[in-house]
Image (tube, rainbow, N blue to C red; front, side, top):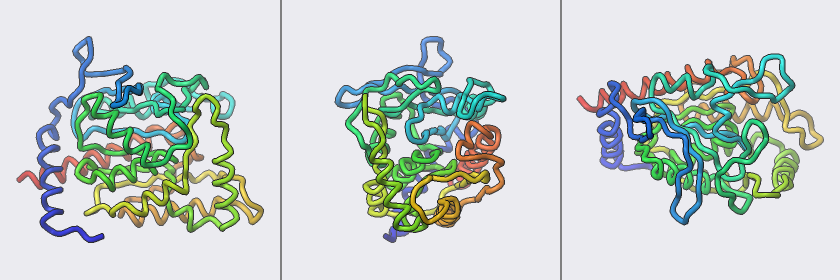
Length: 314
């Protein structure tokens, strides 16, 4: 869908005005008992559901970190434990969220049905599963509003989280100052996987245990939602980070899904006009395996968003 030039200019002007106020380092919204502006609490959404959210730092644009399937906010405050068993995480000041908090405002939250690093459920109110990208994008908007965190945002999505941030950016373009995907899923997978692989993968996802409200993503519905949404009215600063240690969805009988994953990543980078980082020295969990690389990519997008805001404000 083409956007009229006047509408596009209005969107850019609104984005620039919102960013320019704090692009030079003024404090972003947020409240805490100690006056620091940091928050780490459960907010109440319309309808009464509770979602736990953590925000630190000051500055604009605010970075919103959205984890992959089943992952809570602590994916961004933890790193892979050196010498530990596969998948073991530990809290660290070198993780993505604390690295960014010294540079700008940054938030992460626990989606319904996600698990903490120690595999215990989060305190966020469970919801019926499966859930779609639309559900996730609606919650993202509601959580940020309930926490008093104003946009525009640099939206960072890991794996399934990239489906959520992608739809949010399309449906709220004035709130999208930039995008970073961290080995992000996208609708392109439907086209790069073989029909057998796609069918087997979506069947495997649907078969994930729904006990106690554990998160189960609805990929077919989400792809339809993204493809029905309007395209971004103009490119925003973006970086696509792609794993380079081969891993596999382990579905189908027609060979590895790794080539299809890489092909989908290339298509996503082209779609977003993004800088594509393919040398990450990481598997699928780039945020916990290479947190500095991820934080640096996000800072790059923050800097570009600030520069664009200042240019439009002149």
